[in-house]
Image (cartoon, rainbow, N blue to C red; front, side, top):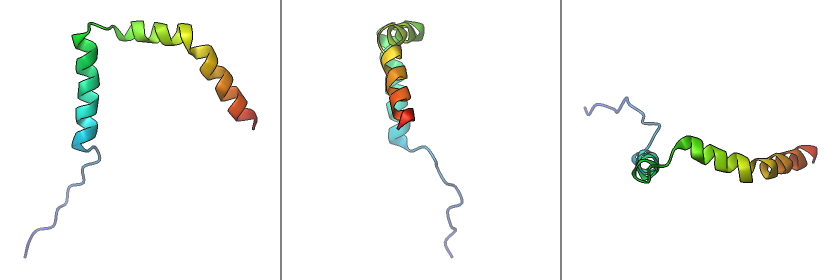
Length: 58
């Protein structure tokens, strides 16, 4: 009898590759994660907050 697989992988290889690529891209460009947060806070935070409130009212 063949043994059944007992392991279940929750993260597939493509997801892991995608995450590693994002990290490597950030490191290769010398981008600081705090700089990305600053850009988001400066340009998009108010828009996202307004959108969230509009959706929450519906």
